Length: 83
Image (cartoon, rainbow, N blue to C red; front, side, top):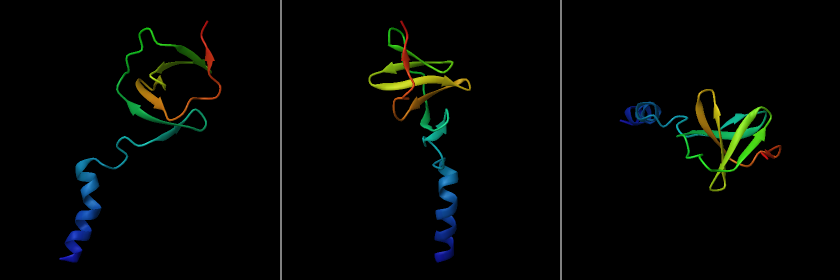
């Protein structure tokens, strides 16, 4: 019985998609980010970071990355406000 429970504990995260789901990963040389649904960016403050446009929505920072949207865990230090 112990072997079956151990095997289930190993396989369950894969079956239910828990592994790496919603987890943070590193982008842009050291910033943590996670995949998110596209935020409502219309009328929101825009920032420039390297060659990227970053949007501030309710205190969080978002940008497109590889065709999807990411949310930064913290504000990138190098952000420059659009004029």
